[in-house]
Image 1 (cartoon, rainbow, N blue to C red):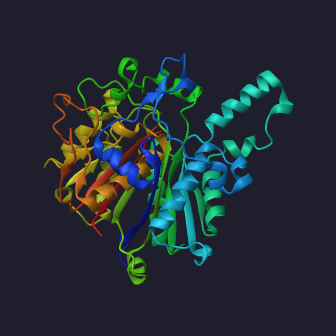
Image 2: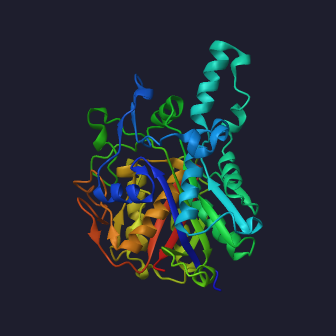
Length: 408
């Protein structure tokens, strides 16, 4: 088995476009933004977000009392993981759980719960702080609860590389499979941090759109008049297996994770260095890991945050390393930016793009910013046969992760 011969055999998504992979995929294909006014943010400078729609009776879906011990970001991860395992046609009741790894990325953990408990402490006293507060906060609890839910007793890891967390989790899972530390890896990212303090803190960094007069059009990656991203919640989980193992049990993968790489900028907490050399090293290393050349890449699922600096830097990276104009899409125009979940959600969307031969459009993109020089897909989905695609994820702290996907 080659080191890169890893199959994506299952996908699970819970996003602002819907509860499940199919509604999320259809929502992204439509190019319609999911951003709406958020009553929980009323009175703040940014009072809109991309929220997951109603999920029904979560207490019933989580298994009764277990729902009480889970923060929202944990519940989203468990739901996405369950769907991914079903999609892979695997049964946790019959697998060897000691050979199943769980790797879940998360940037911030339970910020909603943290803020609520802090208010209780301030206004009601220490006796009103929940004894479950700690497990509601900790980012690693998502990986722990997914492991519990699935009976997965192999390696269990939480990855936190800010907005690259979900993608880095997939890199880590791929490496566990390559090292024979597991036979199945359930990996991805989750986030539910559209809380008042978190949203306001990102606003204060200048990262968020302030387009309050038209919130549905706020996120517009690569547009000439972009002004920042929209906070979002969501979860994306993928099941990874060695391709021969998947074929041996008669399951056709959705796509292959052909290569991947991570690097660090070692430059600044929030800004990329001029020319993004760390991101370029990650892209070139991921292609080398996949035994591909830049010319083999037909499509880019961009990080595309809709911020002035990121989009300009990323476009320059694409034109420099991939000058043959592969198609470019960016899901944050539709789904917003789900931070630690984004890289996994976008990896899943890249797999679906390859599988279905449809490149989703970038929402709200009417005029591409002058000088970017990239082939952005706009207005409607574009049919395309894709030989190889890359998905970029870049995070605060200088974290870069690039995934290379190919048809199964």
